[in-house]
Amino acid sequence: MTHLHRTRTRTRTGAAAALVALVVLAGGCTGATGGVRGTPGAAGLRDPYFPKLGNGGYDVGHYALSLAYDPDTGRLDGTAEITARATQDLSAFNLDLSGLTVGGASVDGVPAAYNRAGGELTLRPREEIRKGAEFRATVTYAGVPEPLVDADGSEEGWLRDDDDGGGVVAVGEPAGSTTWFPGNHHPSDKAAYDIALTVPAGTDAFANGVGTERRTEEDGRVTTVWHTSEPMASYLATVAIGRYETGTATALGTVPVLTAAEPEVAAESAALRAEIPAVLARQVRRFGPYPFSAAGAVVTEDGTLGYALETQTRPVFPASSFDRTTLVHELAHQWFGNSVTPATWRDLWLNEGFATYAEWLYAEEYGDVPARTAFERAFREKANWAFPPAAPPAAGNLFDPPVYQRGAMVLHKLRETVGDETFDEILRGWPEERRHANATTADFTAYAEETAGEDLDDLWDVWLYGDEKPDAP
Ligand code: ARG
Ligand code: ZN
Figure 1: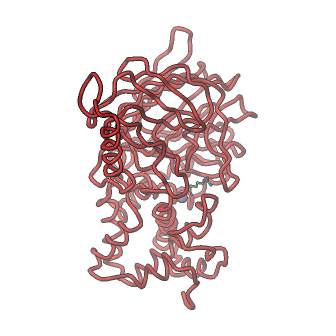
Figure 2: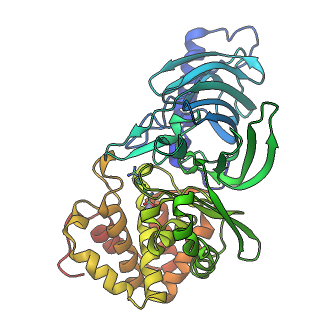
Figure 3: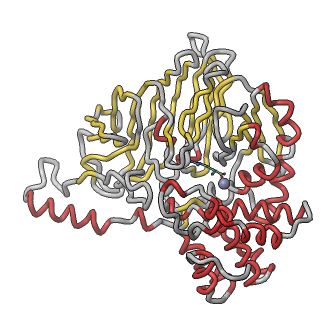
């Protein structure tokens, strides 16, 4: 999806142009169709932690996913229809997909050759795609999805609940979405989604956004369709399948709220689920307009999912994590992470530091615990000083305490440096400035300095990039 702020990782036209020039030089004649000869899109976007995630040469605008799932066998039958625009002349391009079996691929309705190597699925269309052209890639695939085990030991992907009739919760931060649909799985390429879920009658199914359709298939299975109109990074796509009890409400006057909880945890989670409109109303006052046209939550029994995740419009929670603080955290991510999305995984503190600071602000405003107290508590904790928030040493450290707690400490120091009024302006202005786009750490520091009208290098050097713990909080 094209947005205002293109990120550095995606503008690599220089290298592409050089390659084309080389090919033209080497090949001389450019073939029967004439014009410039295309080259394959890059197999990865060179993310500092996941160099192979994402792919070069195109920008996805829309995913239409049709997913049929059989809870008895765990088999998923999928069709992904990906509408994208070429950002170079393409002879071939990659999609990311882990596991599963590809049954066929086409581009603009014409069968395309495809090849798989590791997590890369390469499509070679019969006709080259011209730079700037919109095209539709269709991939059919099937199999029993295998979860990914992250570098930090946690599981993500299509997580199956074996104790409970084979239900599923699918989560994807940072790479789990590659286990259930092919795509451009890097946060820098956000897109709109329609997710159609076909499941046996009597089984419930949910995804992000607004439910737009419900139909019974000839064989009795039931299909529901879920529409996400605002740009979404693939790591924020979710699916929940199983037995659920639902709750509905309206937030902020117009936003439909849909919550779903497994029957075993429906009663205990009902009161907090009903608080979502109130929490959002409080957050709108601090962070500006809610960026999405739907809201809600999915609450599952413990055991399937090891952590809560801010999946777009409908965060998911294992029941034991469904407390007010975590709810505030995951809802804050709708602004910080989901609307303003990190340009690379190195910029993750822009998600976790802000969502953690949102907890501190909430406790200050509604729980009588000054943010300064939370800040000092975090300052004393040794684990928070393992590395600077803007420079996790490895993929296995992305979700470690410094990204969350030291990230929030940066924001508190910023607030103390520029004053409450300017800080409020930054907190509200940043998600407006980068609404539905991507951002780097440098984008944020520049924005903060511009808003404050002062150079803040000393602050960043010590609190954002510094290895040493300062003497005083
Ligand atoms: N982003 C989630 C949160 O709200 C945490 C995700 C943890 N993922 C992981 N692979 N460890 O904090
Ligand atoms: Zn978080």
